Image (cartoon, chains in turn brown, yellow):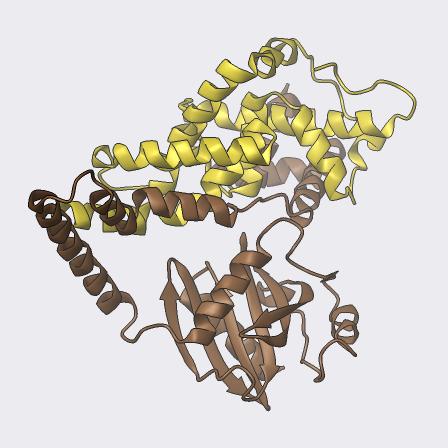
Length: 252
Length: 179
């Protein structure tokens, strides 16, 4: 039965896993078979529903910390220091490890961040991590800029620009209030494939944020100033994604 | 110094996939707290056996470890979850009616519930494909299945998800399959 045979291939087609011949064959079949094309539409809808429900659950901060503790350089150091007895042998071992660890640190920092991360960037990354906890991402969940923008009225003493960039691959997911370095800021939440981008917006000068970019523990940040606002964007997507989002924000 | 380099390589290759590790564990175990414990154990296992990882798809390598840890855990703590498979295997898929197909606009909680009624061996297909965005090849590698079986597995899993969602729609009946 060709239809039954193709019914399974529908999934290969949906997942973009058929070869060129296979997908051409399937497309021809779709045009002639209303049942299969209805089934295909339904599968696509189910996929959209799954994507929109945002079922992906990110690692809690406590897990991230625990893993870093157990595998990171800090662990090695504290283990050596906590070793029993304060005899010279242990101290010598600890010192050796410390040197090795410091060496690792220095090389890594030299490779990743040419300058140490400014305070506002660390604060923004902390806020980003907090936001990824379940239920913390958005105070107002909406893909509609006309819902998100007025939500900030009366909550912050400035009017952030809010725009949805779904067409460019950055769907607006919502907005929330956040606090960076003791200042209340507007946080705009965008999706980028499976990743989340937080764009923190504050009045010019409020964050002490200079322009700049960097990476801390796998999270990238990008800061810039425009139209009287300071922006800091944070994500675990790529630095290129942040650049792209910045130019979209600038163009609106 | 070699150890520090190795650690740095682990940090660069494996740590970025911590979210993926947690997400898979959360969906296989259906519980965030259990997932946190098992994902942590899996990360440690990955760290210890990092010397066996040479190059290639670090995410798939890690997720394979996470999956093994999850099934070990289920085996020990919730064997009933794994029993489910036998019942699922005997299900005969039926022809889809137009009503069956109209399942758009599902809210999150209904999808979560429906997804959690699937047997882990089917649920993982959907989690890896729809949530994690894995290719068939990656899914085959992570789940240690032949690549040819991934498409049919996904077809079955989607069909089951659809049936679970339909089951929720039927009011007053115990429509969902008994666990």
